[in-house]
Image (cartoon, rainbow, N blue to C red):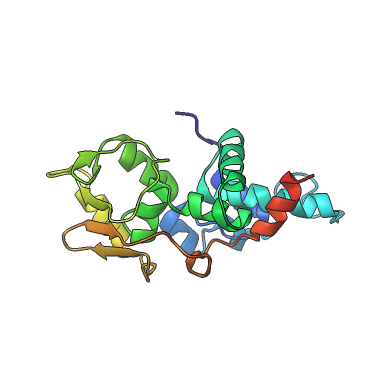
Length: 206
């Protein structure tokens, strides 16, 4: 499974916003954006030209890093979104939101998407009674998500639930039983990702 192994705090600093890639650490004073609120590198504090292309590219990179998706896979999501009826940008965000690793974070069962991917790849979760170990799996309406019986990761998952403030309306979770249900597809107003999807559409439309 290909994955991004670059320093996570540098990714947040590059985009100039907290992407919450490291879970609980992002909520403390140790957060890289809090300590050094400027881009990484020798020229991080210099003045940078904000061209139209640069703004669009940074928005795409922000979305890609926020959801933990590599370049090729992100492009495949965009191509699928553009072929689907509706608004391309909203379709793209909906596909990204419905990734299994992202859903675990939204439910509060993982502190970060990287942790969620690890829990999924190690076989700690089931969907509709069957083990699913694919982080990019697209959840569907009425899917029932549950932790595998007698999993060794139960305490890690319970610790993550304590960091959750609210659960989106399109999902339903039981933190005591560590189960959840997908009620429906998310609507754009329910997606809290710090992304302006129209800029991404403009970038790929050139």
